[in-house]
Length: 69
Image (cartoon, rainbow, N blue to C red):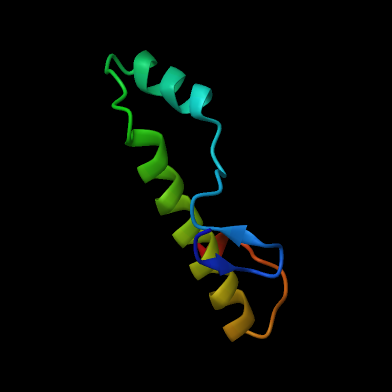
């Protein structure tokens, strides 16, 4: 499979977004959703979560806060 990170076993390719909700929000904005849009958004979210966790650890915390994003 893909690259694994986090102790929880999250892998690149695992979805952290609800595709139907993303598509619904995009449709409500008057746009269509391409087939790769939800995967790309998921990659952005996975990277943001990883970066926020690293920032929390760098600041001596185990709790990720809003400011870490």
